[in-house]
Length: 119
Length: 114
Image (cartoon, rainbow over the protein chains, first blue to last red):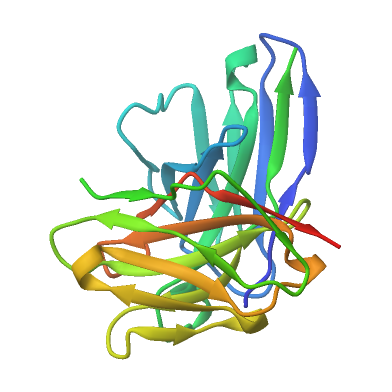
């Protein structure tokens, strides 16, 4: 499958600061990427769809001013957690749909995730 | 809205034993069904998927799953578990047909004893 990377793999920050997480599609261009959030011992929840050249689409209940998404290029999407608080601590995962990689069927390729801890 | 239930939070099996992980979904029609595995430090990896056709699907690493419409289930099986199979397993459904909105179950953590 396609290779999707995330950086950093983990980050610790102080409450009130902002943190940027990068998601890169390493071997193909992606006009669409997805951002998920995973709480400990819980499922992945889709946060938003990142669209290259246009605004991100957020799922219901996700604060778009809190979680800023920028699809800077066809290989890079960033998620910025603004004014982070301890409740934002979580595992953030990005993915790219297979159609972007020329896939013949529908699936998503996932990045390894970024663990955010807000003190 | 669709939902996915994985009734078993944690399962422990001995190496070499058979495995079955349960997954039930709630949706009016037949969705696209997936099983993913998540290992520490690695992204979710697709084990197998069901779109239509043969209800018994084969995946990677010796896994298979059977879609049962009457039971709204898509259980994952492996005849002989290896210690390297220890990981978190997620069942997911997609009702859009475009893999744009995956709904995940809460996951089942598999522990393998030697």
